[in-house]
Length: 543
Image (cartoon, rainbow, N blue to C red):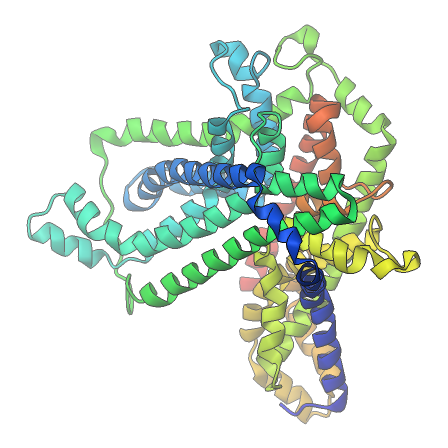
């Protein structure tokens, strides 16, 4: 299409905004570290080397637990005639929309030594404040990353490969291990790398579970430096966080190598209908196993949060212990109203800007031939892969300090939170809007241009009405993680700018864990109401 002068101005303004959101925040702290290179010695401190080893141990153990659960469940959900498979998938994939720290709160109420619900019922046999407890909570929280990838790989694989092995006499077990498993190995490897990236970069679960267990990982050590050491501590924290940044880059590079090398391995052309394994006598036992998995992984932890929110004393379930006092205490705190107001406003404003900027990036990428349009797309998406701890520290150094001028220092202000949320979650808008815009036939816009409409009128009268369901769903999809964000909020928020995630962290960590359950229930209700709304919008858009 013809590029007008106004479109060029908007494009370069968009490029400048993306640079300010994504590149500049990382350049400033890197330059500070270059000038103050001895600060990198913090990486080889004995305590930080121990934390690095503990981070690797925690992530590897959680991955093993996740694969141990995800592989058999994926096979049951895709390759068998198990009844109610769609229901099981919806339940097991629901943690996708939950903040990970809700799982930390849930398992803390279940398995705290002495007072946890499970320990009260079954004897004092569980201890969530341990390496195994930390790995288990991480595995449960990020399990959908493995499940979705492995299920998709099994569904995409050409079943004739397995059938050919069966024709030549291989048993189903041998065909699975010799044919199916090697074919889906790239998907397993790719999802495992993403799982490890999420586990290594996680702050919320290691903070809520690891710190009480005195099991410190890199993210909690970075948090300690940032909160306790002043500006020099922030430099130390960012120097240590470069290990997370390098790990993220390595994992993403390996994931891209796997994707490019093996992307044609599973299938080519139309995939025949998969023949399912008839469970016969194993149908009822495996159905019970699937129900048990849904109960342990989703229903039990969420039920524990809801139950604990109505208890006067933790772990004791009885009528005389039932109370609404936790909710009264929660709403009597002035921090609660501020946190709800701040989170809702930040979620709405950042989601609006992410939707507008994401639409602009997608429009210039798909509808123009401008030289730097692909750069815009990369700038908009790469911060999502940057660990939240690293991004928050970069923003503190670049925008929070004001370069020594107190009047323009943003640390502790809502504006710094908005910049952080827009930078981190802009990728969600771009990834959703780019394919949606590509699906709109450009002939519609060309017809409007022939009738005399300019580019802005064409966007307003043609594209926006067509994409309205997608734009609304993208707005909600972006607002949801902002509403419950914890990692960046803990580092960036100050007095008067508390958020829901920060308040949950404070209540669970040292103030009132039962009140934290009450706030978690309110957040859970909001998420349960929002997800069906997004699904209906997307279904209406597809129709």
